[in-house]
Every structure is written in structure tokens, then in C-alpha cells.
Amino acid sequence: MLLIIGLTLQSCAFALLLISFDFAYGDVSYSFPEEMRRGSVIGNIVKDLGLEPSRLSARKARIDTDGSDKRYCDLNLKNGDLTASGRIDREGLCGDKASCVLKQELMLENPLELHRISLHVQDINDNSPRFNKDLIHIDISESASKGARFPIEEAHDADIGKYSVQTYNLQSNDNFILGVGTNSVELVLNKELDREILKEINLILTALDGGSPQRSGTVVIHITVLDANDNVPVFSQAVYKASLPENSQPGTVVLTVSASDADEGLNGEVTYDFGHISEDIRSMFTIDHKTGDIKVTTTVDFETASLFELRVTAKDGLGLTSYAKVIIDVSDVNDNAPVIYLKSLTNPIPENVSSGTEVGIINVQDRDSENNRQVRCSIHQNVPFKLVPSIKNYYSLVTTGQLDRELVSDYNITITATDEGSPPLSSSKTVQLSVADINDNPPVFEEQSYSAYVTENNKPGSTLCSVTARDPDWRQNGTVIYSLLPGEVNGAPVSSYLSVNGDTGVIRAVRSFDYEQFRSFKVHVMARDNGSP
Ligand SMILES: *[C@@H]1O[C@H](CO)[C@@H](O)[C@H](O)[C@H]1NC(C)=O
Ligand SMILES: *[C@@H]1O[C@H](CO)[C@@H](O)[C@H](O)[C@H]1NC(C)=O
Image (tube, rainbow, N blue to C red):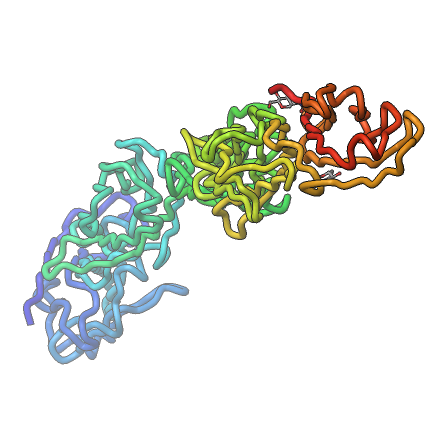
């Protein structure tokens, strides 16, 4: 065992000592490390005070303490060794005083001698640095700027001098370095924090003393990075597109916009609203401030407006706002039936027009789009007319054969237009067409010849018979006028014998006939119509 014993013979005592202990011969002082084993030798008073070992017992040499002072050493009466009587803990006895001196007295009788023994207890590195807590919580705002300092309570080491805390070590990390403050060690922000990348940081801070081997103590520093409202809400898309079938039920959700905000709490709470949009659009759509649902509130008509452009905003609790665009495409629904317009019509049409004559022009329109506006026009009737597609949505109504007013004088032509929507919509229009007369029928007698038998001496003006011719033409063209063809009967003109009523075809005798003059005669009656030609 190596003992470091500092020995000072204090032959000239202090004035005070001289007064109190005028019988003292001298003091001894020993220096030794704390925490020696019990019984370890501290020093030898026989040598140091020049005493006779054989007389120690006889002189009742002993370590004396007055009152409550504790005895720290024992005296070996055989050889004068001072030994440790128990544990000597420097820290317990002297705390962090720079020097730890324990006073003991050696008393001898016969003659009475009193020696002061100073025991200088030397520190050994028997204590580790200790932090007040195992875990230190610090809240640091992510907006803290580089160089900001955050004091941490120092570690304490019960040992003193070089065995006390000498240095600190901070677990290597991205953001902090160590700094020295007054009565504290400091975390110095070396790289700014970003809560959205790292919310919490745990760092181990180690305090080291100067012993050899070194002793150390650690503390965990738990850093909570507090949110600063440094994040704008971010929309999941810059432009949202949705398709809305026209005539959708009011209340239909067209689409949902969504923005996220990396901040926490109020800073990250996003509310949605419309940005600058026209009053018209505002009256047609609503946005749910919480969910971002955009709903249609009225019936949207594709034919009125097929595209809406809305601006939406997402705002966090503290007012940081971002913007997105919403494009709503209204998709067509086949909700408009084709409409047939009669653009021109020749009415009536003469019955003698040739086959293929254009008698009218039809136009069809459908307000829907694409297939919904593709229209076919047709006539589903057995009539001598057809539709011939012309430019765009125009059709010609043409005859497909010879007309005959005398057979059919009026046509109700029903034109049907059907679009290619699903389901298709159709509409129809009836075109009334009359056939105008042409004087194409000559009057025709009902019989080829008529005979009448008359008794002679008839009265002049008496009715002999009547002839009838028919003409199916219209009005004048079908009005039959009768007349006698010129001729002679017995050298006299026919008209001197007979007359025919031009309107009725009634034939009368003009004079009285004489059987003895002639028994029979023939006349030709002509029927002609009143047409032109
Ligand atoms: C055509 O329609 C009109 C009016 O509906 C009707 O009076 C007429 O008799 C119809 N003509 C034919 C030939 O069906
Ligand atoms: C009779 O026929 C002629 C052509 O032959 C025509 O011009 C005229 O309009 C017709 N008259 C009537 C009353 O239909």
C-alpha cells in the first residue's frame, strides 16, 4: 500500500494554540486518500513525535476527541501506528470544500501531553458526475434560429478538483453542438430544426470527470420540436378535374379537394373555400369547408354551360393559404330531342311533276353533342316521297314517282328524326302536301252511243235524251261542256233539229219531226272540259 503522507512538524504553534494548549509539544499532520480500508496505517506518531514506543501504554496514549467529534483513527500502542478506524469518506465529511482536514488529538499522561493531529483527507475519484435528472425535456420551436442557446443544468460530481466534472460530450447529431454557459452547459443550435422532418430528438449528454480512469454520468435530453406555422397547406393536385353529367341531382358531390398541412394542431388544420369565382358559379356549387367536398346545388345544363372553372383555397388555422384550380366538365346527356324545321315547301305541287322533283327542304337540329346530336331522318309511310340527305342537317323532300291528283290529292307526310343517343330521342313532324290539278283527263262519255226513239209530230223543245261525260279533273279542268258537232241532216244543219244543253247534256228537239221525211239520223255530241288547255 502506497500512502502519501505529508508530514509537518509544527514546532511553533499558532498563538491560539499556545493559549489553549500550552502543554502541547507539537502537531503532526498526515495526508492520505479517503476510503482506505479500516486498519490501514495513516502514520506513525512514535517516529513523528519522537515518542518512546515502550512507554505509550504506560502513558495511556490515546486519540481523544472532545464532545461530539468523531474519532477517525486508532493508535497502535505497540508501535505507534495511527490506523483508520473506519470509513473516511471525503465527500461525506467535507463536501466540496477544497481541502478536507480532520482534527484529532493525541493525549499522553504522565506527563500530560497533547498533540494535534491533522488528517488531510485526499480526494479519490470515487464519484461519478451526476445529472440532477435522468431525462431532461426541452421544447424548442422549429423556428428557432441558428445559434440559439438552450441551457442544460450542469452535472455534479461529489469529487473535487480534477475529479469533478471536467468536460461534456454530446452525442453526435445534426442539429446541436455544445456550448458553455454560466453555471450551465448549453445546447447550441447549429442547424435549424424542421418539425416536419424530425419531431423529437433524443440526445445523450455525457459529463466526464478528470480521473483516470474517467468516470462519467449521462442524461438523456429529450427535445420536442414545437411546430411553427411554417407550412402552407398543400393541395394534393394543382388542378382537379371532374366530369359532371348534366341534370345531376342537386347535392351530388362532384369531387373532393384535399390539402395537407404538415404543421400540427391549429397550424395544420385546413379549411377549404372558394377563391375568386363568379356569382353565377357560386350559386351553382358549394364547398364543404371541412371535407373539401364540392357539390352541385342546381341542375346544370350542358347546353347552357359545359365547363366550369373554379378556384379553391386551403387555409390553415393561422391563415397560410394555398390555391388550386378545379375544372368541372359537364358531360352531355341526351336530353334534347331533335327538332325538325320545314325550311321550304312547294305546296301544292302539280300532279305532273317528274319523279325526283324536290318539293321541300327540311332541317333538323339537336342541341346535344356528339352522338347525342347525330340525327337520322326518315319517312315511314308508303308515300311517293323520300328524304335525300343534303348538306349538314338538311334534307330534300323529293318525289319518288308520278303523282296523280285524281288518285291522291293530299298527303300528310310524317317525317321522323331520331338521334343516336342512348336511349335515343326522336320527334316527328307532319308535312301537309296537296297535289294541284293538271288538266290531264279528257271528258269520257259514259257510253259510246246513245239512242233515242221519238214519236213523230213531237213538240218542239221536248226532251229526247241526255248524254253524260265524266272528267275527274278539278274544277274547270273537270267541268264538262257539251255541244253538237256541226253536220247536216237532210241538207239542213243539225242545229235546226236538235239542241244540247251545254251544262247538263240534255238533248231536246228543236222542231217537230216527220216520220215520212226521215226515220232516223245520227248526230255527234262533243264533250269538252273547261280547262286550259
Ligand atoms: C291530313 O291531316 C289533316 C289534319 O290532321 C286531316 O284533316 C286530313 O284529313 C289528313 N289527310 C290525309 C290524306 O290523311
Ligand atoms: C287546270 O289545269 C291547268 C293545267 O293543265 C292548271 O294550270 C290549272 O291551274 C288547273 N285548274 C284548276 C282549277 O286546278
